[in-house]
Image 1 (cartoon, one colour):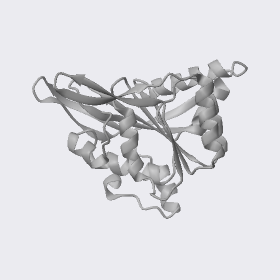
Image 2 (cartoon, one colour):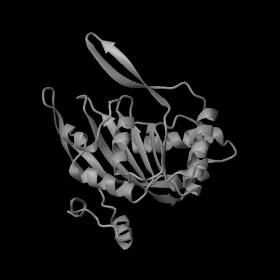
Image 3 (cartoon, rainbow, N blue to C red):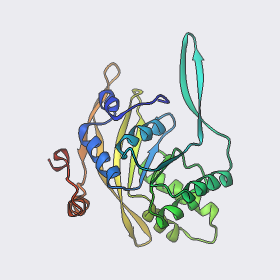
Image 4 (cartoon, rainbow, N blue to C red):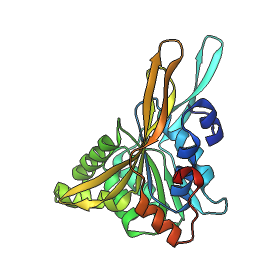
Length: 250
């Protein structure tokens, strides 16, 4: 999935439905911090690039990439894939800080790989830019645990509690984008980072993909269902004059 792709194509491929598109558009247009979590080969970086279309075209954005695209030939077919660049934690941290100093409205980071996560979250919680980033993880909970582990490696003077509070101040929504056994990619869940209480991050599942059937010929079929509508968030947006799409109020 290294090729450029848009949300309409994702809809056609069955990676999401209109409700999910409208929810993600609303989350991004209202300037929330987004973390995209995905397993190996999920296409989470290409998915994040597709979501870029929800940003206003005149916004000052900076893209930071830790991947490079290479061509792989198999028989007569040539396909492009993303491979990770050889970088150090210090190099990645400096690259992010240089982006922050340019005072962008949006920073898009295609992969959080290590201890640079501490500085990324510290800058995000203290500045006004919007962050869209991705991390390799198998679930939203796994993504939070990886962020915590990375940050603790960088900041040994801290315990888990302040790091978890920092994470809760740095991300608003986590999107799990996975490649399933039938080879198709799908948004598996959208979770809201609801806050920090009793030394733990409060995470609420908003939308989940529920498998209806699995067939070796037809593949996996399912639908996206509400787990818990973020009513308070919707009310907050309406108070700011932002209209909630009809697909999200049904």
